[in-house]
Length: 525
Image (cartoon, rainbow, N blue to C red; front, side, top):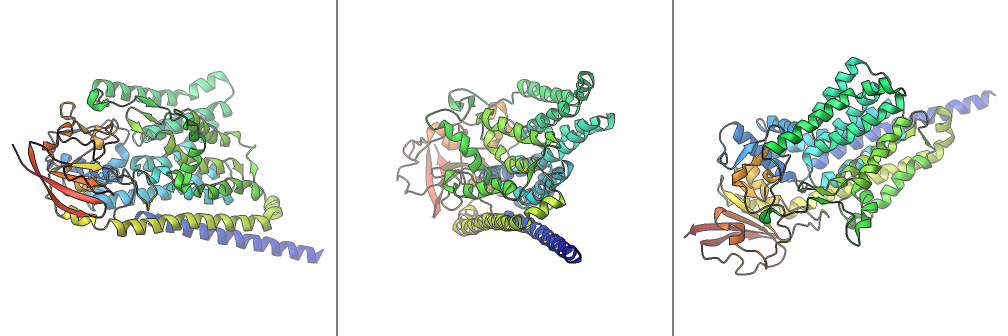
């Protein structure tokens, strides 16, 4: 008996040490993953230059120093207010790019922390905390959805408020849900709608009587009124996305169209850890991550069925949300960031007996999971380093420009062979706007939720709907080329010698580097 007791204590001690080791490895990995935002001086995150341009433009407008005040105006009633507001404040003490990097790094740390906090709220399995790391660096991160990334951890924290309110609906907690929802609304509309849908779904799980259920829904009704007020504001303030021949775009694209529309079913899994099918091998690691709870003996959280609701709402989003609406693309795709955290939440914390029974196998599984997470981070880090080296010559072109000019960004080759993102370069020339007080088209000031919008009578001909422009189809007059001082051209094939021929203005080359050419419009007739 004494021998068995000694062996039991030894096993318990070994299990405790292993858990402690895994926890410290987890903390170190999270801290190291935060360095991904700093490896490349200009991160290869598709939309990030546009967001940097918005912050720089907003700062100059607020300080009265912008040369573009007659072209754009500030849209204060925007669901992007928080992300731009924080970056704006930081931009007064550091460069805009540094402010965005810092905000995104803190958003990543907040994403992991919010996942752990929600896991504790539902008494889920702590061994699955590793699943919170790789999902942040999937589709939404690689496309540079800055405001969305900042809102995601707030959405997860909102669910804690919503769950506690559903369990015990008091007046103070109702105010907390209402206030948290308002903050979330001004962080990002999509995260707001997603989190409110889950929070509202908690109510009937914990409240079974109709009268109390209706009263408990009042905070969500208030948030619904806020949404209606925003839609009315958009309608009456000329903030809708322009339409017409020059701005033609389908109002809604569901992503199910065409003979390959069914790819949407498995693409969502790819988007959890990548941005295109070329990285489908990442999905092999994702399959192992999804198998991890079963391999370590975890059990579904039958004690708290509400823990399954985030995954249920996510599945509905996956299958029913459009891919594009109101000119805003990649709607359902970005929600892949929630897949792994929502999945981990479904499994309850194992008892000491259950952990001991599965301990030998679980340790090997966790080691394999850690290796996969490290491999994922390592691949992304190497790609950023290679991208930074390849694009260093772009700085020489940027240095040839004078500040405060209007520029056209012609992207004939938006993909990056290093980053494996089909839209890595589609906004890269916006660094001229972000750092040299210029203004570059195509510009995010065109889009509905932006904090800086075009004035209704100053919307340019060049717009996001003009996709598929090639060197062979480019037309100087069709893009109103004479309004631009500089033309940044991203290309991987030689440009036609007569690309900018016109009878209005003289166009001269200022320089070329691998992948880029810069032209200047001189005198016009």
